[in-house]
Length: 371
Image (cartoon, rainbow, N blue to C red; front, side, top):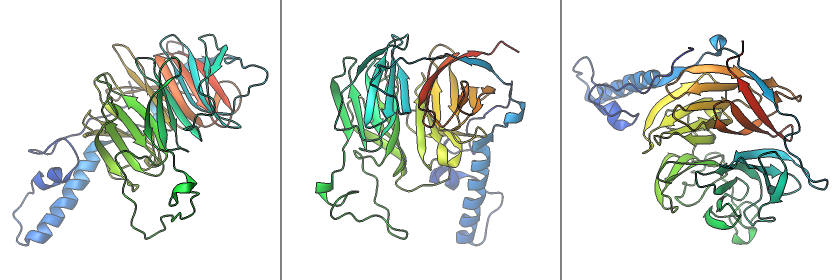
């Protein structure tokens, strides 16, 4: 069955999260004489215990290989249209495939369920600068996440803009990259605080059943932000500064939710997945699956999580923390991978994989029953 990932253990009398209350309420074994020194020792001890209990390592050597195939010639493009880096890939309820690509310019393409080209959505859109990911929500709305413009845009299925989040910086505004009065943050400077409604190279988006929005933000900031369905700020965890402690981030690169509303964050720079409840209270930290560039969670009664390092393997896990299998290696041939940047899993055994280095999307069919 593989190794199991455990949820956060609670220190007696403390809340189930790593925070100051956790440390303050963690009981000591003796009554100190020096109160200040005692509190410092208690803090260090309890933090060490909490982190060790919270973090579970997944060791891949005992994980079985999953047999799989890749469909050849998946996407059929017109003669005068080319696919560049496949930064984002998603699929709607009809099986249509959406690719957010970095080519001569950032473009959003739609293909039908057979891979035939349908259209380009919103050509020369003001928010399209440097594609990062694309997602399709349960209502088949299409969401583009563009790290170059610091914007997320929600399109309806017809391609009409329904909502924008964030704002594209412009040189005319002065103190922005490329601006006439730009002042970069230098080592030793006080970091600029993250703002509720602004992003700094955000990376991905997910939703819960109520339509609340979760954004991983990103390369510039190091946080996860929750908004309600209308884009109103609710709360954030993390900050503008990279960190390695539980609840901190170093390039939160990918995000997904399960049907209970739990939030899974691929904390790529820290080579781990952090699991939060719907209120962004930390529940678990998973390590041992490489640096998660892309994660996706399957629908259905029994859900599974797939996590990929840049060049493979892709790991299959259940949401109780069992690692069930892995597959794939680096390369340029079919069934090999070059910088997997986004995955879509609309079922347990069918995945779409967008690659940067190989400029393609592969459709993978898994055969877990094969030996």
